[in-house]
Image (cartoon, rainbow, N blue to C red):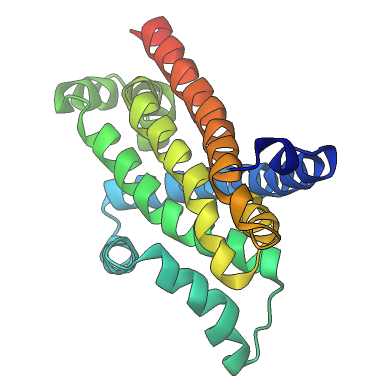
Length: 216
């Protein structure tokens, strides 16, 4: 094990460049999946004829597919039908599709957890369905959704490592390149990237706990 050689300045700089790609892909995917997942979750909760049923089928199909398969599909299969995406865009698209399905279920479950009596009371007081949803139901549901949503974001950040299969230059891919130079770098490098993942994910979990305590 060559810790000195593994942790040279060039190697560390290369790893941090990969980590920046990891964070960038994760951040974009989190924003997109949260928006799409929230919309899908609300539409499914609203039980709009046909729309809700179609979305339910799509969500169930995506949730029961491996993320790795979706990554392969966006990068290798879509070009066969004329849709060619770059490596980064393919990774973001795959993560967004998969996480949107997961988050939509969290949002729908959070909305369903609100007592129906509150909805009936709001409607009987003259509020429209939209006013009831965004003024009463959704704010309460969001408080209950914070822990599972942040947990899903943590999973998304870890799942970016799966994009190594399409050579996305993220943290794990950078580690593999360095490890290919010298077998004595393997353990030191993997220990270092494990620490990097842990620090960020543990920080997110602390944020989740703080938000949960503040909204309790």
